[in-house]
Structures are given as structure tokens and as C-alpha cells.
Image 1 (cartoon, rainbow, N blue to C red):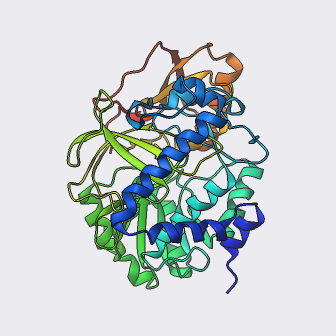
Image 2: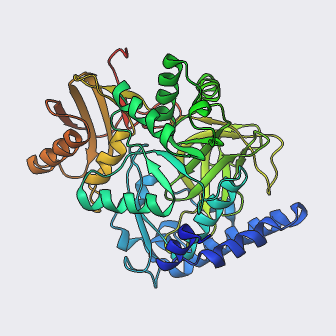
Length: 439
């Protein structure tokens, strides 16, 4: 069988064969030698960026690497300037992979990966899904994600889905009418696995519960369900296992990095130690021992185009006491939940709908630093933002149009510029919150 997914990566300039080979060598390193390997890789990437990346050198304030613990912590705000100013020497917008973060933390920015880094990111994802006999080149995916609604963006995503043998269920409308159509597709297609946003898939499980249907009775080829981007609560996991009839696998990742943690076949939330180095730090940026709760700080070991070194991703978690350098285990992740928007028409849209709204309106000028969207009534949304320059009437109109496109007509928006936005106790800035009573 032709490996269309791997071939598509190679044709786009991403050296997937080389990346898979590099990953295999890393996985084969014995536990006893793994700490040395990680320390060398993290020191090499710091040294590289201090020499090659002017922006990072200015951020650190020195050009020679001396002590890991003294390397300053990066945050999303440090990346809110044009991408071209953040790239390492030798990299341009034409020879790197460029994408935007979701803005789920309220601090959106555009980032880049060099082509090998992007390839080894995919090699790692392919490897982890392989734990559950999922092959991106042959396994059929039921994908619960959003999708751009503009013609070109939509067609691009549909083509990517084709290459990944995926059928996409857009999550902007999760009414019973839509979920009934979704169920019919599971009758018609031999899906191997489900992958997508936790809240959307939970709503589908609740729909099956109301109908008292176990999904494997409709689609017996189904092997597993991988949920991502939002917190998975135990009660929801049990509900999905009951009405899907397959194991529920918890994924934690970030588009600017890689998979951060992926539930292994033993049920442990195994941290990616192959392409990332994950630390848990206290409020003074001191490394905490295993078992202690603190902020999650991550270093990308392979990204030469753009430094992510000791990068505070905005989440709080705990590494299990049984963790090792080769096999860290994420014991607990705090945060990453999203509310559901219930609209006047009765349409239900998950909070991550706003991921696609921000994708369509964010500009690479770093003006808007933070934002939150609050639903105060079924038809009313308050948008609070922090920016260097007040949004113009035209910009506001474009934002309103984008939200209306993804949701529905007749909605009201109030924009308020603020000096700062209120955060949760964990320091998380939740991008969307509903203040109305859910039905």
C-alpha cells in the first residue's frame, strides 16, 4: 500500500524518512544513557540559538551558554512581534513551516518550525498513535475538528484530510440534527478511530446515551478514540468508553511544539521525551521535584528556525514520582477546559469554535496581546482585549463578521480595551467563558 501521508510530507519538503530514523535512534537509547542525551540536546539547542538567533540572544542577554537554570523563561508575550524578527539566521518565511497558535490561552501568536523539526513532530505523532495500531497511511479517521469556512482554506483542509484518510465532522454546530447525521456516517464508513476536541466528542457520546446506542454496534471497525485540546474529566471518559465501546486515549499537545503527553497502552500519560524537554517550575522558576505541582515549561529540542527554550506554555501540572528522564509521566494537568456556547437558534457551538475565529482575524503585528470572549446572554458576547493600539471600527467589523460566519446572524458584540485581563489562580487566561446558565 502506498503511504500517501508520508509521501505528502516528503513532497512538501519535510524529510519524514530521516525524521523517523532519528526518532528510532532516540527511542533505542537505554534508560541509563538517556539523561546524558537529553542534557546534551537541550544544551546544543540553546547554544545554537545564542549564536544564530539575534532575537533570542537579545532576550537572554548573552551570547555564550553557561548554566541551564539561569536561562530565562519564555512566555507567549515574548513572541508577539513579527515572525520575521524571531527567525534564526538562514531561515525565511519561505523555507520554514508557519502556523498560528489557537489562542486558547488568550495569547495568540504566529510561529515557525524548520522542516526537519516539523517532520520529526509528525514522526513522533505517527509513533505514538502506532501504540494503538493506528496507521496514518491506512487507518480511517473520524475527525471532530473545526474547519476554515473560506473557500480556499476549506479546500486545503479537505485535501489534507484526504491524504490522512480522514473524514471531518465540523464542530461549529453540535445540535441533535447534526449528530444524527454524524451517526449515519458511522453506519456508512469503516472508521478505525475517532480524534478531536474533547467537548465535541463528549456531546456526541451524550447523544448516543440518549439514544441508548453503543457506537461499535454501528461501526464495529472502531478501535479507539483520541481526545485532545481540552481537559478530559473521568466521568466523561467513562461515558465515552460506555457508549463508544472502545478505549479513550488522552492527548495533550501544542501546535507550536509537538505532542506533549500521550496516554500509553498501560494507561499512563507518558510525556514526550524524544523531541521535548519538560520541566515543572515554581513561581520563582526553580525546578520542582517529581510529585510537586507547578507551571509546565517546555523546550523544543529540534526547532532551529524558532527558539522555544524554557517556554512557559501557560498550564500547570504534576510529573509523577515514578517519572524518569526517558519516561516522564504526567500525573495531573490543570486547566484546558472550554465552555459551550448555546445560541438563540438553539445551535450549540464549543468554545474552541473561537480558535477558528482568531485564526481568521489575527494579524502578524503583535498589536492584540490578550483577549477573552464572554457570553453574557444567548445573543450577547463581551470581547475584552489588551492592545497597543485601539481596534479600529473596520477591525471590529471584521471580527464581528468572522464570528457571525462561524456561529449565526443576529448576535451582539461589545468590545472593551483593558490594561490587563483577569486570570485564574493557575495563571491561565481562558479564551472563552459562558456566563449564562447551560441547559
